[in-house]
Amino acid sequence: GNSVTQMEGPVTLSEEAFLTINCTYTATGYPSLFWYVQYPGEGLQLLLKATKADDKGSNKGFEATYRKETTSFHLEKGSVQVSDSAVYFCALATGGFKTIFGAGTRLFVKA
Amino acid sequence: GAGVSQTPSNKVTEKGKYVELRCDPISGHTALYWYRQSLGQGPEFLIYFQGTGAADDSGLPNDRFFAVRPEGSVSTLKIQRTERGDSAVYLCASSLTGDPNTGELFFGEGSRLTVL
Image 1 (cartoon, each protein chain N blue to C red):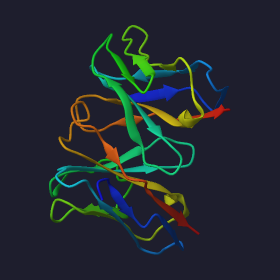
Image 2 (cartoon, rainbow over the protein chains, first blue to last red):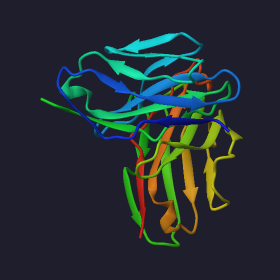
Image 3 (cartoon, one colour):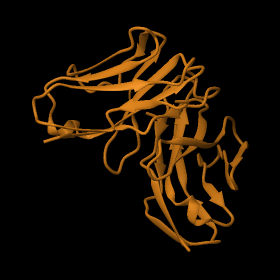
Image 4 (cartoon, one colour):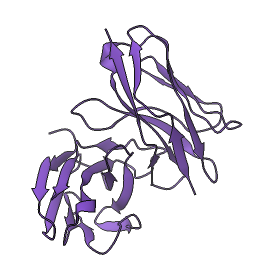
């Protein structure tokens, strides 16, 4: 079946450090891939997405590239800020209406 | 409000009781979803509405769970004879198109259910 696996957290970084959160997927067909973010006290919100192989999604300094050959969609940011502290969820959708989420990775950024 | 609204934000109940959780989606969004998020896990799909009808309820864990959307707007998730294992955060999301590839999901803050 379809599934998403992402690195376990928490991830703790100092401000201005480089961030990578790994995500791999298993899917039939050609899924669209997403990163959602949940800030403290708020609902999940879409951070970025990519709908086909080799597409790069980007938003707020975050990037992720859809790699079909490695079935991966790793999230990266060159310089994190304290305000990026949140839980990050990798997700996929396979042409229907269900979105399948990973378990989430909590990020703490220290000043 | 402009976003997805869920009430109550917190519900504590006793095993065996009946619970209703309400979701008010973004105005004009025809697609509505319920997800369940257990501690340390990602959201797990429960049910999807397109308009008034449940297009897919395959994620409902058993027949104690039921959801309605009678007028195509507000939805209520109903849980009968609650069990301790039902404790989780219940998330509602709405979307303009119903297709995650083209229509962004907008989530509410969730209703945290605790069954004692």
